[in-house]
Image (cartoon, rainbow, N blue to C red):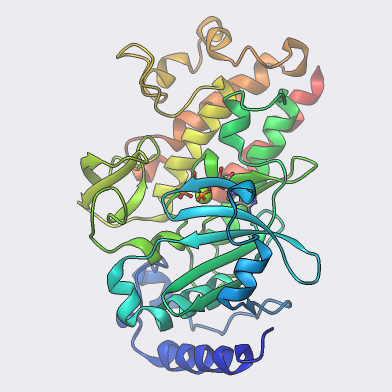
Length: 369
Ligand SMILES: Nc1ncnc2c1ncn2[C@@H]1O[C@H](COP(=O)(O)OP(=O)(O)OP(=O)(O)O)[C@@H](O)[C@H]1O
Ligand SMILES: [Mg+2]
């Protein structure tokens, strides 16, 4: 940790203490808090993550990325650009350079650190590890462990040479389900956390194709109403958004839904998005594919007809998968689970722990090849 880091960490911690002691109604709504949950249970302080979140200076971020050279640019998303970086100790990291709304520059520094402090409490093998952050002047960076295989969406879309067979897809689905089940449980920060922007590009892969999900909770940092193309009220991404809770008004350049909420985002909204990712894994198609005919553009349209109809199901299964890698029983069960996750009615969707159990069962059903 850099010199001023410890002092800064103390400021964050004491602010957090004061923040926790406030009425829960006043707490930021980025963490989902069903009333019955916190009324019924005493909030016990969650265990702190073992490793310490590091605080970096702008200079350190510049040095790690060779002055944000394009050579180190790994991608661009709704939060800003992501660079591959090498820290002083040789550790390879991903550095997310956040384009924060102007309003955040004025008084958002403390809020940014508090949010990061909360994110740093999350610790699960299927979540991308948060290594640290930089809040230097107007600059904000989030530093994560580097995921060498990039994101699931790119692999499914054939960017790169890798072809994924069914057992690998099941493993990825199970890893992602476990991560969401962990976020939704109250073990992490004392209350359930809604991801808010779960999608295949936020499922990153290790060298050995273990799935880790990223960007948990970060949507909160970007929720100011600003220009459509930069910092809109980000509630999710088009194609993954829970239809029960939003009236979609517009879509920005990054295919993000810009909407007024008709209800609040719940854990079940993540389950909906998870169902869309299951369908992507099954079919190899994008959640929204504007190059298809009007009936095929949206992946979830038609899923209910496929369930229970083996002939139709065979037609939608991704041809990139070796036929011998899956059993019809296992893909049928998988499609049925996906269909339940994308039910219009949130109450009809399974919980994430249920998804974990079902996926384990589906894996077992695939062993009979
Ligand atoms: N920890 C990481 N390790 C390696 N690559 C990463 C890491 N985090 C993000 N990336 C890559 O950077 C690119 C941009 O990521 P980013 O999260 O900014 O955008 P996104 O996931 O497409 O959309 P969103 O902004 O909604 O999350 C993606 O292609 C992703 O694969
Ligand atoms: Mg992302």
